[in-house]
Length: 595
Image (tube, rainbow, N blue to C red):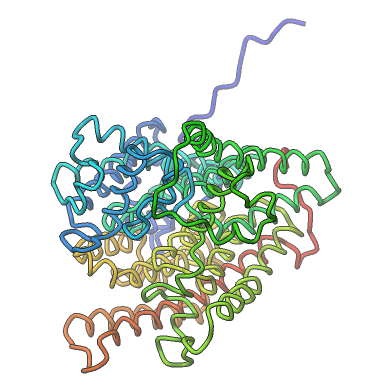
């Protein structure tokens, strides 16, 4: 039989845009019934809709646009600039670079703990070593041990800002692109609308303000998390384990996601039937990844032991060492140097002695204590840590149970957000910057089914604007008020959200139908919170706090944020229940052939 000479033409990108399902970026004009963009960000991409524009051209444009806002945010001051004696996070990151390039590896977690002692996992230390080595080639004085503390030089600032952007574009940005594309394929969202969701994700104001304004490397950890999520969407569970161990190895805050990831992986090994080889493979790869992560630190310790290099004179044994059997805790044991290093790292990474919360963070504990509802200072640290553990377990159990019983990829983003909100609201030693963790998976919902329709966009926007508002006291101390208002206002305008627009609450949804509308209770709740946020900013700017109550406005901000975040937790939990289809009796429906 001869091969037919005619081959069907490959679908153009224009036909692909119309064939796939809209997630809410397009609406019908009420009078002419013609399509038009539903919000300004969709209008920005409107010229590329339905025309054969290369996806690489669009992606390059997105990266240039979002990169420009990141770099210009870096023009402004950073945490601790010209503020002795301790300065701030900028000095901490600089110090870790000088520490790792000048000291033996066995000293990293013991050296001068009073001056920004290293308290992040080993992958952060390796990252600091790489950045420090490159920076020392450019200017050795930037990282001269003991001699350059509190350096606010312009050249150092440019270098440090550049390391954040390069690290982000190497890890976070590619992971975000892949994750959004995986979501688009899963929900049959056309590439044009996926590009809009990707831009909204990369333009998150809180992430830009904290990493490129305040100064941190959160996007490295968040990028590894996105890579893990994308791998789960693609059915590559073992790669997901590797990437998530990297996230944990960079910042311990990735533990906010750990129960949900574990529940999903465990559920995929149990339902619809037990898959023992898969479970064993996940366990082996996870343990091997942790071992590889710790290997450089242990090899460095072995080399220092071989040279008989002692620990710093000020070093004290880690507290956990006393709980081990004498055969392991004895200095004569061959394993003693390695056990000491690992236990000291754990002791530094998990600072239970610091207290229940730090500064004024919009979670339950700070709200209860700061508002005077109940003073927590009457309780011991052990009692508070146990209470925090119990409340956190209670908050994360429902989403984790859903992921275990219904391990569907469609549940993953909302359940991860619910779990992270539970940790943020109820966890121990939570910082205000940790709000970035629940925001990431919640914002991913924009790239999924109905993600840009008011019923989802309104809630995602509400959480992001509220989160940025709770960060304002921190950003104000760093002199980042103008970037805060510009980036938050721009993001709100691009997605037609308050305070710049009320379209998401009262605009037309003729193409989508009434199911895309926000419920009236959501509208009342959101608009009331937006009004409270605006009112708070006005009062904070023009009204002095009463005498003897210098933190009154900050406590009011905490109250608004804690209440709003609690509602976000409930909404994400409900979205997880709906996506799981357990209420419909569809427990183990397979969404992908690789599932």
